[in-house]
Length: 195
Image (cartoon, rainbow, N blue to C red; front, side, top):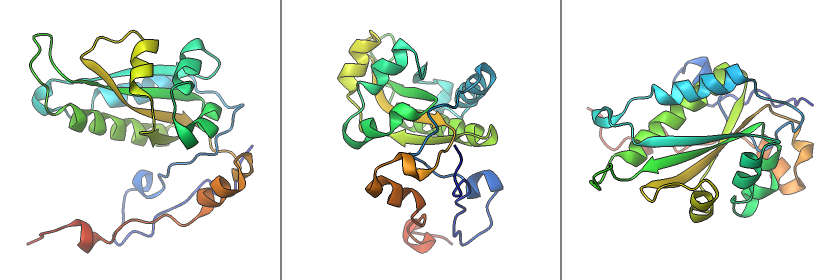
């Protein structure tokens, strides 16, 4: 299944590299498409090589392909609207914060590091011809229990990865959001000082 909205370029005020210009977060995934071992390894490797404060790398991942028990465990811990569409993705990746080191000392840049790694994962996925959608609506405690995570490892996000399908796989409201214009706040509202 393909869609006429495979490319949803930005209305950017400045030229961007094509991978950033064309990146968007679909909810309409082709539930028959698969992700190869090479593609999954590539996106995870990109996440691994993202910048890290003091190179502490306080981020971990659970990568689950559709059709596996791990995938079912992740989808069972998606909240609200996310559960209505994410089950069609080829893979779901749980982004996990390492909140303290083994000695119990806080790793205060864990959220920053995880965000960086997921941004790298996103760009690599797009280079692989895939799309991602990051979700915060998750049951972190449920994911911790499902994967028997140590207390210092805290699930923070889930990222859907897959091939875009026609928006008609979604309900009417979600399908309308899928083809709506992409928007961001103007640059002069985001940048508080530029000299």
